[in-house]
Length: 337
Image 1 (cartoon, helix red, strand yellow):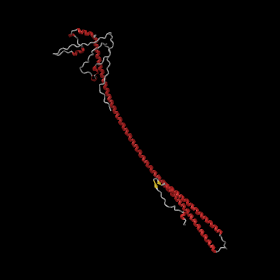
Image 2 (cartoon, rainbow, N blue to C red; image 1 turned 60 degrees about the vertical axis):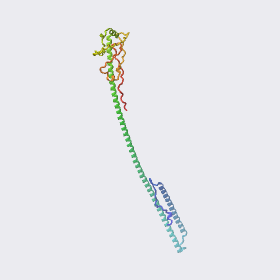
Image 3 (cartoon, rainbow, N blue to C red; image 1 turned 45 degrees about the vertical axis):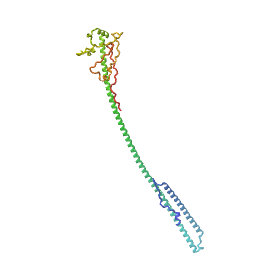
Image 4 (spheres, rainbow, N blue to C red; image 1 turned 180 degrees about the horizontal axis):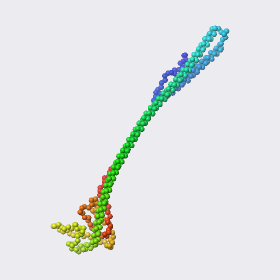
């Protein structure tokens, strides 16, 4: 039994592996499995050699027994006893060798089975630990992804809400500005329409007044004849012009009488028959009609429109004077920001 240490090495020593992030170190496990397989192969080789030695010993004993097989008459009792002892010892050694070989084979098979089961268990534990670690990492990654997605959705909702509020504020401000501008434009349009209507009425009145004056002049005859008659008539019998009657009131006591008004001199139009006079050109609007104050508020109360100094004779069917352009007298509305 002295050769047991050489035939059966210490395969039952405790093996430990370093634990890394995802289980045991793969390199150490692979080295342990390779070393165990080498030891199993070495045990099988030793067992084969032991079996060969036993077989060879058996053959040698058989050859010696056949070669030295004595006859019953030639051998003495002492020699027969020695041979019997040698045979018994050889049988004992052969049985012992067979028993040791069987035990070695049994131990080798048991050790190889244990090593394989241990390696399989280590691999399964390593795989289970790796799966558990992978599940943890996957769960953490899913949780982190859910958090990132939730934060992104919340940020997107806040951005959309802010944009919507900003758009509503901008739209409200624009509508308010548009309403203010529209109201100002409406007020200005109404004011301009009113001014235009007043100007048209004023121009219509001026045109009618001029038409009446021209009609009176045509009915009275040429101005040269009237001037000649007036110059021949004594001053006390001269007629007073209708448009200046309100200016020749009786003088107050203690005041000198005012002189006669100067006659209006008009040049006759030569070469044009009186029965069909040509249409007169449009008369310019009086200076007081272009005043911003008269356009807006009309003429002052009690004021009499002046008579043009020189008026040509025109037909009673003269066309009305077209209205003159009206200037805007209202200040412009303040520009909105």
